[in-house]
Amino acid sequence: MGTVLIIGADSTIGQSVTKAFIEDEWHVYAIGRHPERFANGVHFQYALSDASDANAISQAYEMLRTYLNRNPNPPIDGMVYTVGDITARKVTEMDAATWRRILPGLSAYACAKAGLETFAQVLAKENPRWRVTVVRPAAVATRFWERVPFRMPANALDVDSVALRILEAYYNEHRGNLDILPA
Image 1 (cartoon, rainbow, N blue to C red):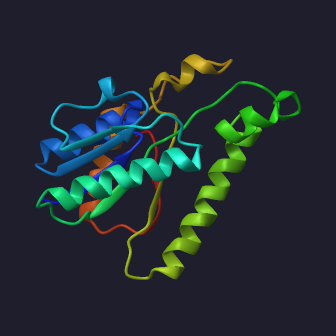
Image 2 (image 1 turned 90 degrees about the vertical axis):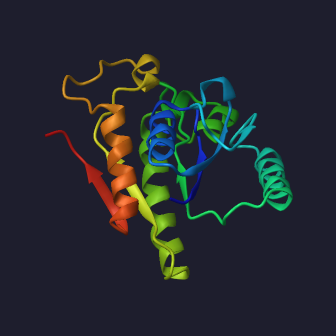
């Protein structure tokens, strides 16, 4: 089918997205902190120690570039970024290192999401031939809920259905925001 790079392939959503692309016969390149969580069948995998560290990101890029130069691979057709983290601290209680690591927190998390959407809009305008999509699912049944002081909503989305909607969005050449809501 094609080739996709999934950054955060070890997250709950990343695992499901990876699996969906592999089942649809894509070449998948996986980057994440916990390679033991990567779905079976990835063609390239890299353990990234810290997604907030520019040097670690550069090293991941160099390893992928080296892999692509050594192997006769098709170009990367798409990228899915599913990296995320959260802490249940108030902004006023966060130290600078935590703020930089997460740029979530609850209020900080909302700021990070808004910033990502604005970044994606600018990226799409600067590169009009690219299809840039920001997936905005409602609550998803992931490990996220283990780290916050409230319960997962009863109507939380199934992670596999979210992954299939992301794959479908690629095939439908979706651009812009993609809201995924419970039925």
